[in-house]
Length: 141
Image 1 (tube, one colour):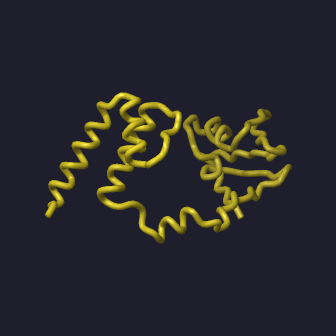
Image 2 (tube, one colour):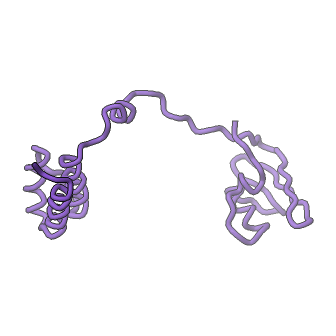
Image 3 (tube, helix red, strand yellow):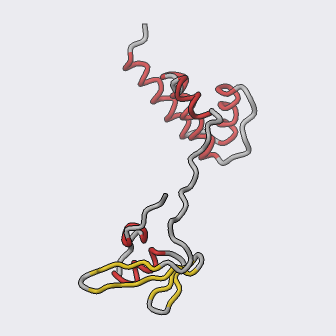
């Protein structure tokens, strides 16, 4: 009967062997482990996928319930819409100064300059990178 330690050692040896194989050797190993032709991919990709496959075969794959969730046709999460409309004014008090930003379509106007993102405005105000929505306290619906 194989012990867990001997099983782990066998997996470790196989993973080390994969790292030292040439691309043609990896392709042959792919055929052995997957039973089909390997994709026309880099040696690194083949090695990573084969490493996963070796561990999958020894330790088992994904739980059946998780596989169902990952492959289901369940509706995907929709991106949240911004609550900011064209012409909206955004205010932020920062270190004793009140700052005003105006939404201009998909851009933001601050101090006479248009910015592509609120993060750009927040950086102009603070001098450091911020998530713009966090800095201005913007939530989504």
